Structure formats: structure tokens, C-alpha cells
Length: 104
Image (cartoon, rainbow, N blue to C red; front, side, top):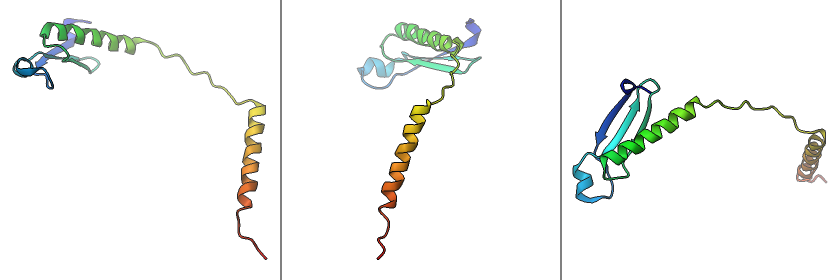
């Protein structure tokens, strides 16, 4: 990752933390320009700690993008399970047919 590939913005964090948090821009937002991934960190009242956390999160997200997905192995239900499923459906159909109008 190159320095020109990221944009770092600082902003005021919201939420609890008192006057210091409301007046200083300690929140960090890092944008990875080639991929468009955006990460933020506002946990700490320290800009430096938030910058480190945001960088670590960006590294994790980029590593997850590079990771290859394992292909899904297609499976089929066994003959016994198909037979059981069809038998249950037949029983349900008989049960529902019995709920019809009574003639006579």
C-alpha cells in the first residue's frame, strides 16, 4: 500500500467523552482510493491511537479482499433422504385431503 493510495481525514467524534472529545478532531477516517474501502476509528481521545487503529483495520480489510474464496462443492441429497421427504409429502397430502367438505 502506497502513501498516495490513501486519504486521511480527521473529524470530531460524537458520543460520550466530554468537552475534550467535542472540541478536538480526534476521529480518523482513512479512505483507500483504489478500492474505495473506508475505515474509521473514534474510540480513543488520542488522534495518534485512532490513526493506528484505523490503519490496522484497513490492513485487515485489504487482506480479506486478497484472500481467495474456497469454491463450493456441489452435493446431492441421498436416495434415502429423498424417499423420506417424498413419503412425508404424501402423508401431508392425505392429511390435507381429509380436511375437505364432508358430502352426504
